[in-house]
Image (cartoon, rainbow, N blue to C red):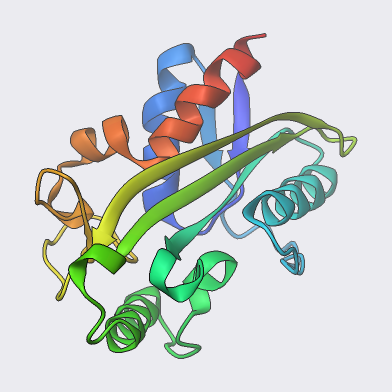
Length: 198
């Protein structure tokens, strides 16, 4: 495999994926404005949603497609926001507005929850589908931490400023290289590499 279309409109995700897969000679092409209707991500799990996207876009584009579904699981909230992470607050016209609203809602819901119960993790599931709709490979990765009391850091996106890592920094305080080496997406990608090589 020499080329994969990355099924996301999020340029940050494309950069993270390309940084890893480029090392094994796979060119990552952003899907861009292909004019293909977004499939309904109505799966109950990250795996189901990643498959829905990968298969739909691979068939529509006639190309191998890598899709991901990722989000934040907070133990004190029973795993929420989970598969609803991107639209948790349900408001915001731009990605930055949605991120801010999601983070504000999460902090409200955890108000008064003690540190020991604020454990959380980012989860990423990657799925690669062929043009005929068959699944070529799937992988899952985690990035463990806990939810801080306030946002810190200017790097990353989404809930990165809230996930505090064992070294005391938030995910948004890591450099891109540090995040790729440790993150849920990086872990999933490293699990995916031997499957794609095979």
